Image 1 (tube, rainbow, N blue to C red):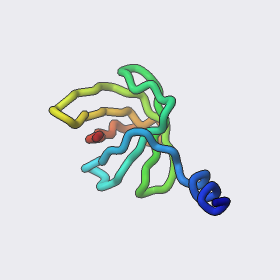
Image 2: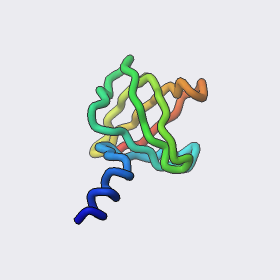
Image 3: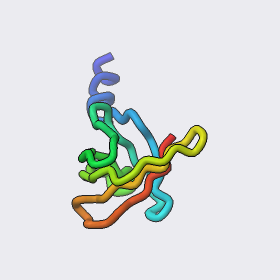
Image 4: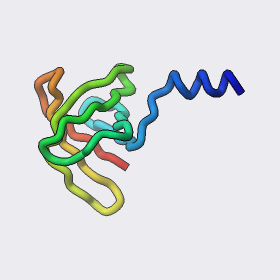
Length: 84
């Protein structure tokens, strides 16, 4: 039981999962981020194993998925995420 608690604390608690096709990387956005145009969010890049901050530029819904454009403040570029 204790091991399960320790393992759950070491993994990020991501609420919304997606994929960045340009970088071939899975990304996740934690609970507590307000994902709206103009808002700053923090997201986790699984490929690099670290968090980044970005400004939401646009949100487009396509059926059951959402395309999210985020200006990455650390890299100075826009990233596009396909979110589930």
